[in-house]
Image 1 (cartoon, rainbow, N blue to C red):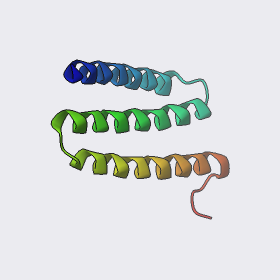
Image 2 (tube, one colour; image 1 turned 135 degrees about the vertical axis):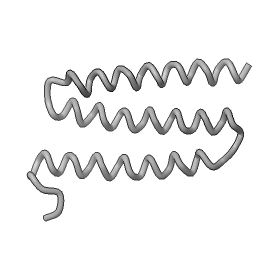
Image 3 (cartoon, helix red, strand yellow; image 1 turned 60 degrees about the horizontal axis):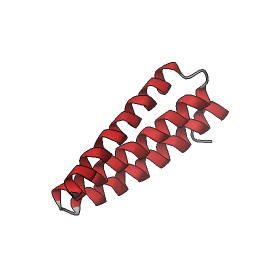
Length: 89
């Protein structure tokens, strides 16, 4: 039964990832595109965790932590670039 739930979650997060890709391409403003990228990072983290549950190994949980850290730093850097025109002051 857990296998069906995991595959359903894969489908839901995959669909969410495609919707975020659409928002990234068609977003009316830069803020919408930044939010779409940040939400895509969250969806990728969820997919990695689900894959780790499906495989039954803890390596993917550590990989999801690395993706989360890189995603946070990249979102902050992109926002600073949009607001100030440069990342490092």
